[in-house]
Length: 159
Image (cartoon, rainbow, N blue to C red; front, top):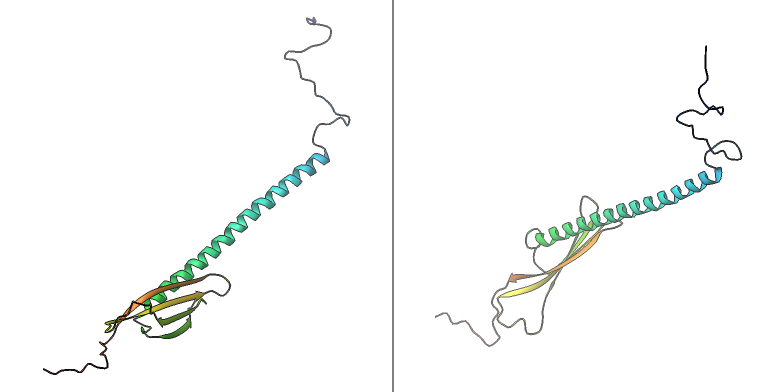
């Protein structure tokens, strides 16, 4: 024989939570909420991708500029060796497409050269340009030995 020991309402322990039901009878997100969430996500992704692409573009430009500067430094170092230290222009193209130009011109400043002079000063300008990006211009002063110049009135005395 079964006996009932409890209240008439049939309560259980622990009591169940009642679900709040919407008008449709089911819980969840509405279509409008989902569309707003996707729109916000798309805007955030667009901004993030733009930031990363600008960063990569800047990194590529910096790399091209650095490479052009290295070529220009090599051009300065070649003056006096591969390129003679005399007035003139020399041009060429590196294997990676960078065009270079070395310009050597006499450097004269008032009061700097006093006869007889034992050296000649040259201004060396090296310009390197890439195909699309990356260019550098470096300049330097170089000294070259010069023979002693005699004045017009002086005569060598062989004594």
